[in-house]
Structures are given as structure tokens and as C-alpha cells.
Length: 232
Figure 1 (cartoon, rainbow, N blue to C red):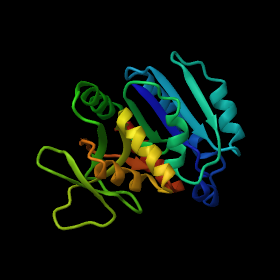
Figure 2: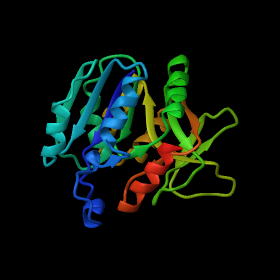
Figure 3: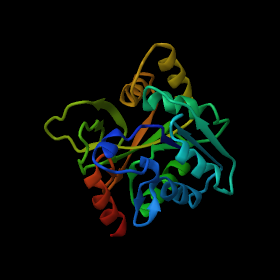
């Protein structure tokens, strides 16, 4: 599995709330968030790792450059206007096989993530596996519509009666999805949620894989919540 981490955001809300460390280096129970993700990935059948940080993240860049990893590692240093653009930058280093992408502040339990990767690797029919959860702790959730076989039929900005899932922010994709990404870039599409809609419109088969809980670290108060969650 090729892994990628988007760590190019500014983390401005954390800074405004008094958190001095750059978001990727904020610790959860003593471990930087970005290192926690890397360690989980390195235990889940990795073939490569790509990470993007913005041009102002000198401390994060130095930290990542000091790491010794057992797989090829590509560090992209570039400021981008959105997570979709960051995804495009790291995607250019995927030559073959399946890949899994997430943002640095997406917090999940390792056992759930491992089951997700194993299911994605075993499925030879799906073009992508999207993590979903019924736990809603996002300021602007992306709601997921599925059929009775967990095939994703739509991505929606608003809830509706009977909605079950929101996006968990973990994206498992295959090479056909990169062609859709290139088309989105060429057509001026922005935001990951609009890219995901384009995947459905292009006819790609996307499966929803349920996690019990996924949380994001957007505010200073989220740090303690995330620490308690991963300690359970």
C-alpha cells in the first residue's frame, strides 16, 4: 500500500487558541500526530510514503527529514490552496498499486484502520474504499449516501432523514481515481468533497468502510479528546 499524508494546512485555529507547536507536531499522549500516523502506516503493509507540508513549516520539514523509514519516502514542500491540490502534488509519486491518503489531524484507532486496509487490499473490484463513521464531530461534515451493499452513491453537504454516515477523511483509491483528479485540476474543481463527487459521476465503484469513530483535531480542546480516544 502506498500511503500519503496531507500536512500542508496552517493550523491557524490552534495557533489562535494558544497551541505553539505546528499541528503535525502536536502530541497525543507524547507522540506527534504525524509520527503516530506514520507508525500506524508502517505496520500496515507499506510500499511507500509521501507527505506534503507547506513552505512555512520549517520545523515540521526538519522533523520529517530526520526520520529513517523502511520504505521509499517522498517529502513534498509546497503551499497549496486546498487539500485536493495537496493530494494532487503527492499523487504524482504513485506509480502503481493502491494508495491510502489522509490528513494529519485525522485520528482513528489502529485496529480499525488495519481492518480497513486489509479489506481494501483484498477487494479486486472496487476503485476505492472510503472510511465512513456514524460519529459526527465535524464542523462541516460530508454526508455519505450508500446502497444496501455499502456502495457509495452520493456525497452530500446536508443531512437528510435516515442518513447513516459521514466521511471519515481516509481515502483508499486506485489508479483510475488519479485520472479523475487530473480532470478536476484541469477543470478548476476545488475541495476534496467535490473531487469525491466527481469520482461518483465518473462511474467509479466506491465502497464505504465503517469505522466506529474518527475524530479531527481542529481546536485546542480537541487534543484532550483525541488523547482519551486513542487511549481507550
